Each structure stands twice: as C-alpha cells, then as structure tokens.
Length: 280
Image 1 (cartoon, one colour):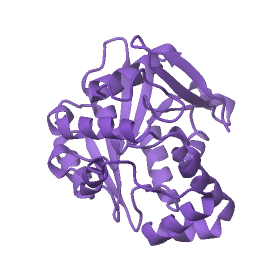
Image 2 (cartoon, helix red, strand yellow; image 1 turned 30 degrees about the horizontal axis):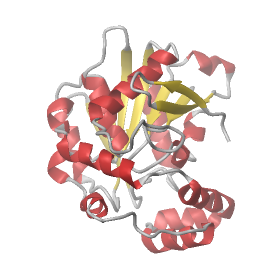
Image 3 (cartoon, helix red, strand yellow; image 1 turned 45 degrees about the vertical axis):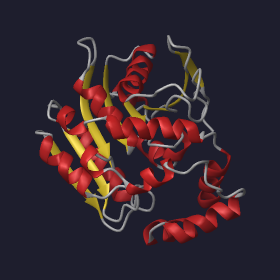
Image 4 (tube, helix red, strand yellow; image 1 turned 60 degrees about the vertical axis):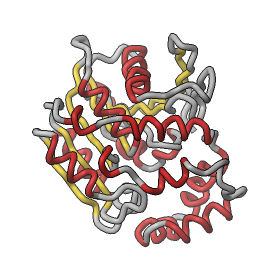
C-alpha cells in the first residue's frame, strides 16, 4: 500500500492522493503523470496500471471528491466537472508542479478534458491521454440504469462473491489474466468489496456526466492527445473514443483488442502504447 496524503479545498472537501516515485533516479526529472479515476471508483482500482507507469516517471493518483479516502461536506451537494477539474488543478498546484502529463480514465477522461481546455497560464500540460470516456451524445445505458435505482444495488459482500461476479461479467482476456494471477485477482476483488464508494456520490457524478458537453470543450484542445479504448468495453462503447478522436485535432486513437473497460488488465501492450506516447 502507498502512503495516503491529503489536502483541503476551500469548500471543506478533503482530497486524498498517493505518489509513486520512479524506480530509476534519472526518471525523477521526467514530467510527472497525473491519473484521474473513473466514475464510482477509487484510486486503488488503477492497480497494475499505476505501478507499471511509475517504472518510467513519477505517478500521482487521487480519489475524486467524496470517493475512497477523499471527502465532501455533504454527499447531496452538486458535483460538477468544473469542480472536479478544480480539484485536479488544486492538487497539481499543492504539489508545486508546473509541467505535467494527464491520464483520465472513464469519468476521469472528461475531467481531464475540462482541465486541458481551461488551464491557467502558470501551468503547462504536455500530453493528454483519454481512456474509455463517454461523450454526451453516447451516454452509457449502464450508468443511467444504475442511477435510476432507488437504492444502491445489492452487491458482493466478500472477496469470493466479487470474484464470481467478475467471472460472470468481465471479458475473456480479463478472466484469463486473473485466473493465471490468483493473488492479483484476490486483491482486485478486495478493493471493490472494501472501498468507500458512496452511492450518492456516484449519483452526483452521473448527473455531471449528463449535464456536460464534452465535444465542444474537446475542440479547444491542442496538446498531443492519445485516446485508448478496449474493443469489448462493457460500459462505454468504443464509438465514444472514435468520436473524440475526430474532434481533437492533434490526436491518435488506439483500440485494444479483446479488452473491456479496464483495458490495461491482461493487455500489457496498452501500457507500452502509453509509455511510447509519453516518451516521444
């Protein structure tokens, strides 16, 4: 486990983050990479991705407000993308970072676009990576169905139940990888069972998704941008990333065969693509 650090926003929200230092001393000089978590998720769910990326540069991960170890004053207060982008920028400034790279996954990709499209002059975004993110015209039916439930769905209560659920719902490549790595499978399932993921915070996040117009903001992005999407994404259809790739001028789109929403699990080539993009 990585040590958790905290800083407080002006509205009383408390943001939790981890810092993963690179293995080689010379890599400390490289531009740091900020990872932004997806909807209804916690920073630990970047398991496997953050550690591999930290082999080549400093990596910073954090919990979005109200999720995981981060907190909010009230779970019923609105959470907008502008607010979540402000949290991201506040973390960067809190750490004294001036130049950075940004990777957003799912909801995190939308936050990253908001950051990139409205960045202050004292900060420099070098490269942007958007992974498996949805756009307004192609809103995920899975998220809408979950949002409309009157209460949180009854989910797995222990690690084995969570693993059984993954075996029923995940794609073949994910399952093959986890079966071959049982210790990783146990840990990944434990994260999903034990993490603090309030249903009301998910609902505030989903309301933000439905209210944003990411396409208009994406047209303003001019930094080099990589879009990655699993071909078999069970939550966000790959057409979302293809649409974003057409809107962002300086962009490259890569699809990862036989992978789902957590595209990096069982697909080491995805991490290679990210590292190559960041190093060129």
